[in-house]
Length: 121
Image 1: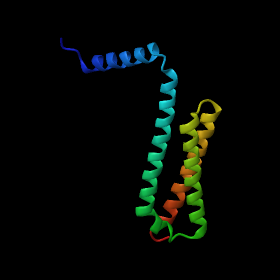
Image 2: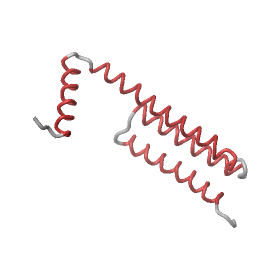
Image 3: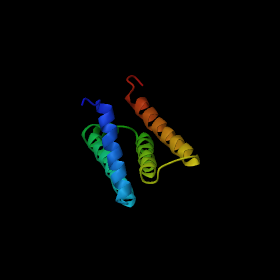
């Protein structure tokens, strides 16, 4: 019998879903989901830290103090905003606040970085 990979994978997914419902493991699934969210957030934070340590720290250290504070403040606000999203999730007005804060912090960081890395200014 030749089953397409899509159908086979959907059947496997359905079997896992049925097993979770039959064995009454919804709470375990919610717990695993929360743990995976936290682990993913920590992995992103560690990767960002290593990139900053290897590349950004020396360059940013040459900027004026005010630009350093703006850049690091924007990054810190963005990290807090992402942490809120990963732990709590967003919908409705919370989603609007999440995207506005993320947009403002990314704009401030990118604008500061571009102003400091332009040659001749």
